[in-house]
Each structure stands twice: as C-alpha cells, then as structure tokens.
Image 1 (cartoon, rainbow, N blue to C red):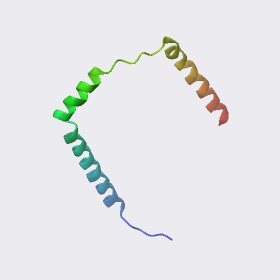
Image 2: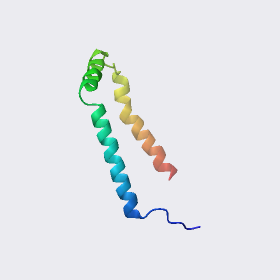
Image 3: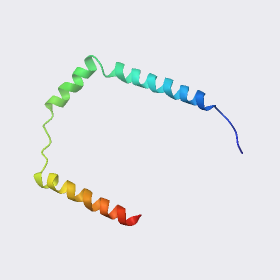
Length: 73
C-alpha cells in the first residue's frame, strides 16, 4: 500500500512554519515579567554541591562504557 499523503516540499514547509510558531510563542512566553520571575526563583535556589569524587569518576565511567560498547559491536 503506497499512498502519498503530502509531498516532501509541503511537509518541509509545514515543519518550518510550525517550528517558527512554536519558537515565537515560547519567546513571547519567556520574555518580560515571567522571565524576571523565573530568574528570581533561580537566584533563590542554593547551588548544587557536587562531590569531587563524582567529578573524578565521570571520565573513567565514560571510558568503561565506551569499552563495553565497542566490544558489543
């Protein structure tokens, strides 16, 4: 069953228009007063304390995962 619902150019055009509308609506929602309120909330939060052990282990964990993935192929 080979049906052609929409041509490729129309699909790309529809995607571009939809993404522009979403981008514009998000831009309007997060500018102005609501953006200032969000920034004020973030300034009140305490910074995350990350352990140095975790930061030191991240590269080694990445190497182990890459080794495991390379052996699985």
